[in-house]
Image 1 (cartoon, rainbow, N blue to C red):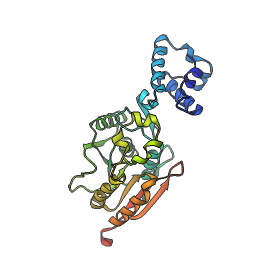
Image 2 (cartoon, rainbow, N blue to C red):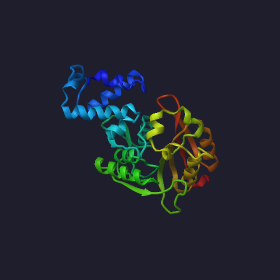
Image 3 (cartoon, rainbow, N blue to C red):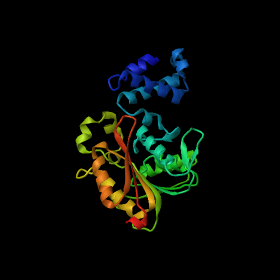
Image 4 (cartoon, rainbow, N blue to C red):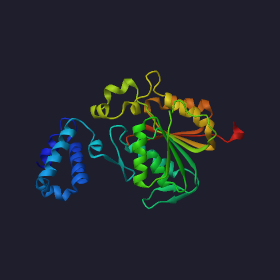
Length: 294
């Protein structure tokens, strides 16, 4: 089996460049083969057991299973997160959202990777944590921050706890339905969420490997209102954020204006929408005003 044979097997599902990238990722992560090794033909020198395993991997990829699930790992903000079919694969857009959060505020420090991090400790809530990628990243990148993460899925909470333990992050995970938030006295400096937001109308435009393998409850908003999660989280945030607290969302560009209008109605100020790397309105920040201005 050669590198060329492997990537050609995936071209029914992917463009050639993406097929090549997927195969290179498999050969690197699972077998430690560099691009130079591949060019030297070392794929054909794998042991019989490795060749058998590689064939099984190729068959799973040919069926459209995302490479992250096949390998059991996805890179997010430079860290390896365990993933499986019970959680969404972390996206680059979500990493952009994390970088925005870690760089907001008045006091910053430059981290070793060149990004900035808030110096002031704060209380952060991640709603719908999935693999834990947002919560764990913020816990590790913002010093002295206390992070709590909610999810309704027991599978997601198991995976997120596993990731927090393996990456050395201190995060409190709670089983909680975002549509029925608790009535408690906790107060947050930052609330962040990447909620289910895809509408049923967008289903036909989605890639088959996403629809067939990623959890639908984490992808699709309610049929009656695909922006419902944003509204209920906004309702909770306006009550529980501290004065000048920040609410961050990953957005569906199609409902960005609806979400912005709803948050404005609730009393949020300084609403800002940012574009992702593809030029889509993908991220939002809103600020709870000081008590005196309410």
